[in-house]
Length: 285
Image (cartoon, rainbow, N blue to C red; front, side, top):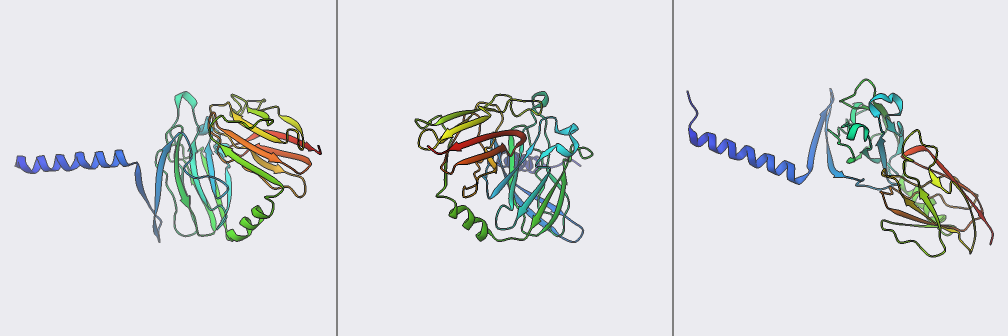
């Protein structure tokens, strides 16, 4: 028995409206159900950069050639988050192999509510942010490459007050500003984030890689991202009395400016590409 033409027309019109609304808004709801629970995670999608920034938000990078990298497919492959401090995260697909490879970040095991499933993340695309509020170990994988791409998020109980107080108390010894343009302060020491430094085979990451500055002369430094991949400038070891620093994501052409006022040796790296390391030695003027 044939369907009435009027009903068919209405059904087609509704279908078209649904497709248009979903593709134009860019806002999705993912529902992941465990055996004894079901939770909903809200995700926004952006192209070419993250939608939340450190230190409260952690970016998990999907590396170039991730499908064959096993334990290093994600950076960090084990992310440790503290509730109230940095328990929000997002995924950024940096896998440009062959023009771009799609991946996912899909939760596999969780202590209670399963918190996230990104769906397909295209190359140079960000999915998130996601916030986990239940302590425990969350294992996840790429549903497209499930046997090779795995990662872990460990969430511990904490309080945001302690971290905020620590950052505030050290603000007098180190100041930092981030800009997205190309403006650079006069007398600042320029440091280039070298083109190609985001590749695991690279050996040149920052130029100069080891810088020496004098307080009152050139103790303001400006990093410019000359690479096609996003990067960060994140402190690892700092002198006593100095404050830690973290640029957040620096997109291509982006600039990060930092003023150091405590003498000593500062070691830093890119939190998205852990092999990228640099040093700044600050001397009294």
